[in-house]
Length: 340
Image (cartoon, rainbow, N blue to C red; front, side):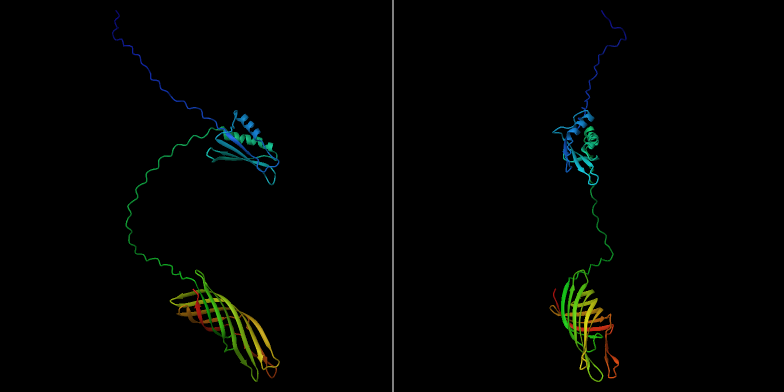
């Protein structure tokens, strides 16, 4: 009989659990489809087969397959100045997006691109594909917007509205004008005027004036008759219609043709002159009925040349008959028609 010795521990057989640890498979090295684009390089430069052999020798494996997910595209161009060939290398992913672009330069022959192309393409295909980036962390939930507070009453003055919203308009006017200084007084004649006021711009004025009836009697016998024809244009910084009242302040330039002709003089004389005059004008009118306005004009002309007209008296001495004044006043009344 076998008796267990005192204090002896019983034999216990234990089994360690077997844990299986997955071993990651080696990442497949990338392969690509080679696309060779010779472009307009002349003579033709076709080195795709040499590039495939050189890259395979550099990497120790075949790097190009017909149905590979990646594309390596080689585009050639020749420099305009030195004639050197340049290659643009593009690495295109399976989704059609360009992953990377490199550029290498060689000489004038195709063979000079073999070494730099081999190195760049091999480096593009040497590294395994990038591991997928981890999923972005979930965006934090937006905080609830605070309860809108009641706006506090403001005591500041309200912002004044833009009052310069007057629509544009146009006026055509006809009337009678006269002058103190351009011709001997009295004189009179027709005056025509066109006013155009665009929105957000100064007014534009174009007009014409003809003065007749000016007559200067000479001592003894004879006289001199004067005639004037004047045209001008002006800009009007102030040109507005408000409450059926029109007011325009304009500055411009006028050119005048002035003729003096002797009457009952021997020998008969006639003289014509041209005069250039800067001018300032103020015109105002009141809209009476529909589009019709009635008003007047007051202007000041500053003739640059003050023409003088003289005659010979009985003793043969020259006497002044008239001299153009500077400044000279221009007056008139008119009726106008508002187009819009």
